[in-house]
Image: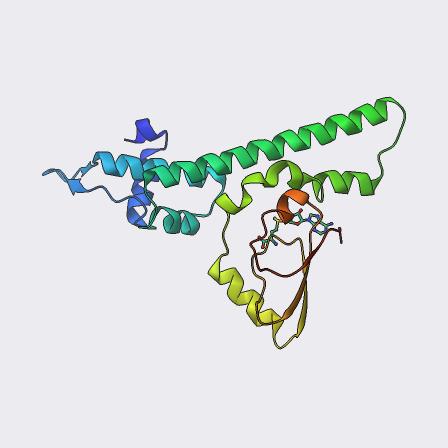
Amino acid sequence: MAELADVSVRMLHHYDEIGLVRPSARTVAGYRANSARDGERLREVAYRRLDFGLREVAKLVGDPSIDAVAHLRRLRGLLLERRDRADAMVAAIDRELEARARGRKVTPEEQLEMLGARLYDAIGGAYTATRRPEPRIAAQIWDALGDALTVLNVGATGSYEPADRDVTAVEPSAVMRAQRPAGTAPCVAAAA
Ligand SMILES: C[S@@+](CC[C@H](N)C(=O)[O-])C[C@H]1O[C@@H](n2cnc3c(N)ncnc32)[C@H](O)[C@@H]1O
């Protein structure tokens, strides 16, 4: 199983100990015996390689409302996002190299725009398919908002916007603005 999944035996034992991937049976001699379903679950643990923390992975693979196809779609979306991000950064670096070769300096504002405000036009296409609000973060945000009546949401995908306050959203990426759910706060096309 370790060989198939390309993880160490030690890592498999660790996954077992923390309840992430529990082998369905034990042999008489006490060895862990894995079923095809365990193998599938182990593949889902590939989220770990996408730098999710083990707690997040446990939550993702433990979600009974998500089947294998949905998991694969999600993983695929995350990988595409990562690839698009790398492509966008390579393109930004190429532009800067070209500018420098011509003796022109790229301003810090231009550099930041490529890696911030403009980046999401390149990588944000699948945002709503791969992201959703995280309750622990939401709780901290509601707490921090206190009794504020007006809220400015900078970098605004529509997540974590309280419905009971006067919210103004600011989002420079057209791709991201287009994914804001219907009925959310008015959104200004601008960069902070
Ligand atoms: C990682 S997303 C954050 C998403 C969002 N806050 C959420 O709760 O899911 C970062 C967002 O910030 C936006 N952004 C980047 N640079 C910005 C800037 N200078 N001013 C405002 N928004 C910016 C990006 O376009 C992107 O939509």
